[in-house]
Length: 474
Image 1 (cartoon, rainbow, N blue to C red):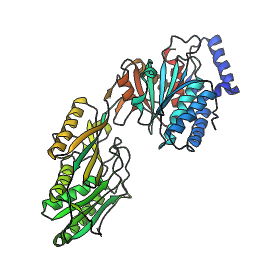
Image 2: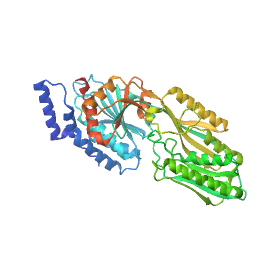
Image 3: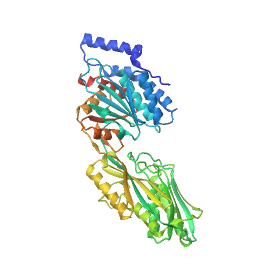
Image 4: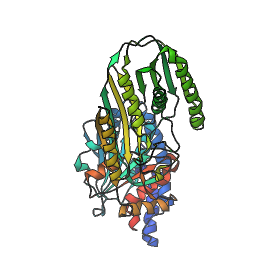
């Protein structure tokens, strides 16, 4: 189960070594070509990816996955150390005559919810490590998803860190947005409903996904249901919210949401008509990208309790006031548009809502690539919550990472990638990166995040290997 192809022990690899040695001895060349490096890793990186994906797919959680890589390291006599159940580090000393070369740490995320990405990053990092021959000290860090902050500082005492991260195409990042996972909590009062009609409003079938990937204007079912209910309230319809549920994570686009609402019998037809009109408009706006979207309203059984008129208003007022999508405190509206990452500086995602018993909880993810804007966002959401007599809390935050786009590591990786026909340009991402956490923990190290994909696995692994072997300096 823990078998991996180590090409250092295979005949083809030995032949390549002899060829390289002859090249350097008789022709005086100081470097090996990118084609040679690609030939060295091509079969192995894909074989190892399939092996890892198959083996890891049988495991239940990140703890077992870390054990898998730990046993692999022990089998190959590579020093390894583990802390708690959050991570594992593999380390190899510098090669002979390479003691003065800079130390490099390659970082991979271990995620039981994304086996393919875990296998991809591990295959590239380990294939590069196993094939490196003239390298400085190499470390590979396997970090449990969400546990970057737990990495012991001693493992980050390196010159350069390359954090591998899943992307659709090769990307180079030297910065990422500040991010905060926040909640708004409010205690509500309930009462028994009067005679009336109960409706269940539901939106489902939305694509969802990471809210940092904003390739088009995504629908937000929580906001839409709240907006139509607020319109009904402004028109004087007598109604009470009984429950409101939606979303999976504050950082993800909402896939579905639903609300149960009590309406006075005299208002039932008008209430239903307002939603029928909203359903038609909503589908016209979003069906181009969200072909599985459904938006329904139907009569349902009468709830035993509903929120009071005042607290129904509080829920709708919060949903109306809170920014969702592109953040612009000076704009009259926060309506999302089709701007892509490079045109945005900040945005928020109202990702969850839940009413349980007498409690309302709203989960919001805030992101910004400018610290002043991020600070203003935090204050704006805190003030909005307090104006509604609600409590606001930052549950988790990731610092702004604003690294250099022209240091030696960036230049060397860009140069090696170019030799492998991969064009990389330093960029900033809104997506969460472990690199941001590590850069904050050790400001002396040079840090990049390298976006990797399997289509370019050979070229990317060759890029890493050439860098580890010091080819940027030859």
